[in-house]
Every structure is written in C-alpha cells, then in structure tokens.
Amino acid sequence: MVALEIEVPGLKRPVLLRPAGCYFAGAEGRVDVESAVDHEAFVYLPQGGPAMSVHVAGEKPSEKPKIHQLRNEIAPGWVWIQNRLMGLFLTVNNDLMRRMVEVLGR
Image 1 (cartoon, rainbow, N blue to C red):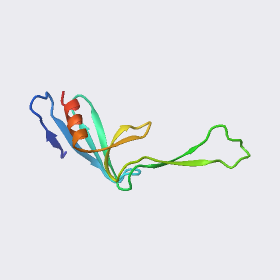
Image 2 (image 1 turned 90 degrees about the horizontal axis):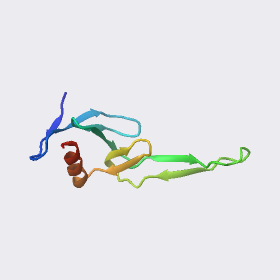
Image 3 (image 1 turned 180 degrees about the vertical axis):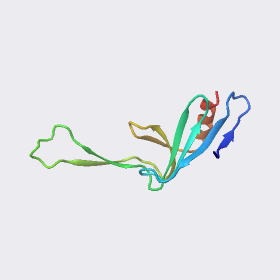
Image 4 (image 1 turned 180 degrees about the horizontal axis):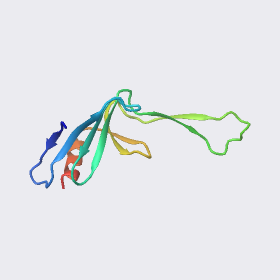
C-alpha cells in the first residue's frame, strides 16, 4: 500500500500519510494519518464546511418544523476531523501538521 512516511529527529515513531480513498459522503478524498500510537483522518471538502439542519426541540406537532441552517466557517480544502460526533473540523495548515506529527510520533 502506498504511504508517505514522515520521520522527525527526536521522535520515536514514524508517522504515515496513507491515502484512504475518494468520494466519501460530503468529501472528495480522505488521507489517514497514523502511527503506532493512534490515527487521525484528513478529508478534502471542496465546498467548505458541511451544511447541517437542526429541528428545535419543544416545537408543537401542529406547527411547521423550523429548520435552522448551520454552516461551519471552513474554507474549501483539506480539514482534520477533530471530533466525528460533534462535527468539529480544523483547516489543515503547517502548524496543525507539525503538531499532529509531533503527537503521533511520540
């Protein structure tokens, strides 16, 4: 399997960037970032952050449901899925990549 191995002097483990596929729900690519310690995922969001709809609790059944649109303030491009359940996405940049390699390479 193809992967980019990153080794940093002073860190114990290499970190692998492994392409995981393309055309995921809402994304056009995924790269897994992994080491013996843990793994994370980057996805490519061509349209930016995902749009989500929520229904307000406590609405009366006879009322037309109110749908509130939420949109994360994410520029199109590669993002790190920080918390899959809460939908937290951070834009991948130089600082984030360095920190992730540092943590996963311990």
